[in-house]
Amino acid sequence: MKNLNLLLIDDELELVTTLVERLEIRGIQAEAASNGRDALERVRQGHFDVVVADLKMPIMSGIEVMQTLREEFPDIKVVLITGHGSSDDSSQQMVERADGLLLKPFSIDSLIEKVNEVVHLGDMPHE
Amino acid sequence: MSEGPTPHADHDALAFMGAVTASVSHDLSNVLSTIDQVSGLIEDMLIAVERGVAIDPARLEMVQGRLAHQTKRGVTIVRKLNTLGHTTDDPVRQEDLALVFSTLLVLMERMASRRRIQVIFDPEQTGHMVEANPVTLYHLLYHALLLVMDSYSDGGDVTLDLVEEENSTSISIAGHDLASVEGGGDRLAVIHVLADQIGGKAMIDADDPGCLEVVLPRVGGTQE
Image (tube, rainbow over the protein chains, first blue to last red):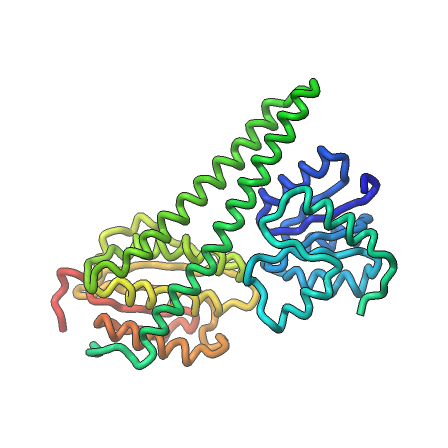
């Protein structure tokens, strides 16, 4: 886990920045982005193992970020953050294609546990 | 002025309240999530102190600033939500349009940010008093704002202005091209009905196709 690079995306910048600081305290490398477009630029310029993205964001939704990552970086695992009742039936199928889901609010331990879980999913191909 | 509600008026008003409270509940959830994580960060820092690690006061100040900001944000949202809730208290009362818009803009902040809209409004434009059913007034101005926000496909500025006329107050909400809004005709029809219910009217500015004008009778004005 400590050798992984995480990218957290949420338009709630204070939330995502705080999460990154808490991960760093635990020795986990992480970066924060406040929208999908900036996040994808970071991914193209760096190396990330797991991207954790909020489902509903301006500019690009978490699903759009996931779709782009699937095309350009199929090895990157994607965890989507959802709120209660935040997705309709049509988007639910797309949400389920993520490697992992987190329901807001979540604890730092459940975030780390989820990231560990998706990293150890193995090399199962995406649909 | 219409004598009674449209056949779907009750449902429409409930749908408006539902849309606003659903949006605001996401905002409040984000506020609480952030406070929860900041609280966790303080706990992490205290554990570090117990282990002999010194804390940079500037970092502590930054963390405290986040906590203060989110608490203030949460309090503001709850106050405005409370104001909206109390619109059902009286069938008719006088409302200051600046305060109505100040309330709506907080409650619609998520809707605006998801559309990448910045609303430009001077909340000091107080004193434009309208006498109306408060729910209908809020409902009308919510739809008017949302219609203009949707005139942008990729974000932009919405400018809100209040102008006192002899017998009325003219509310000007300027965005992009209102004709381009999907379902705009139906939505404009709802705005017409609501404006009519409180003795006003709504129209797209003949000189500016991106500007919606809502004209409401002002308190103290002479009814036509």
